[in-house]
Image (cartoon, rainbow over all chains, first blue to last red):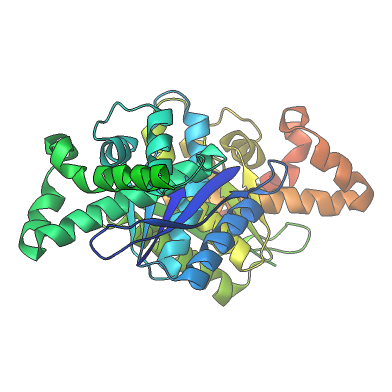
Length: 202
Length: 202
């Protein structure tokens, strides 16, 4: 199955497509990139560019699910509003193409990828590189963050599938803080170790 | 010509349609309302409702221009982000239907309607009522605010037309602060007085 991850913004919207087995294993990088919109253009035009590009990606690749980072700004209301506009355009593109979008907090993404919520940006990026078996961390950061969101969703979907439909509802209602990072991240971490081993052997 | 005004939000998006002569005179209320989306629904669905409703209004009435209030939040970044999402959905609907959207600050709207930027909400609403020759202030507030945005755009367009194409560019580049409220609002204020007189005669 295919999953699209989105790192929202107005100037830069990162996106990343990841393929994986239905149980969330064997994650493979398909494509990634950044939608850029110039600050000088009218807002309507910038939003339309994001909306069209994400829409085209969904149209072209038909991902089964989309993951997008939730916004968390305590510092600057103006920056928050600007990013929120771009984020809405991306979310709206998923709605228009009838693909379910799941929102993750930065904490959830960090926990899913590294096993703890206080991981640094670099640690998350290194896990993206390891899980996808890449030589380098994808650039720019917005693309790496989008791939991290996609992997977080794959981790969640895989975990729900492994648990079965009965436990799925319980897992969904359980708060992130209650997760045992060791068991919750076994799958992704195991894959990362596998990928590292494979590259070591080459 | 027809002008659509929008008071953006996620839970409540106010809208108001106003007809007027090409010089901005003889403003008449056509319709107004509020798009409501329930807080419990997924974000994608709420944005899609706003996007579709504003899109349907544009499709149905074909306004020549759309006016939307700019966001100004100093207090709460979270509220700002929520409103910004809904605002982006409305702006995107105008872009998708190829209608130009003009953004106005609350200050610009107050100045256009009352002649001074420090007018109260009530003063602005009373001017909406007077200019459109209504018996009461339109309810809820979001609808009245949307109509105020539409009247602000009509005022601006009318003023630019009266000035002619040469002075138009100059007027566009002039900051709002430089406007002389007395001359800038002559048209709307005159119309409001006319409307009051007419009602008085009945």
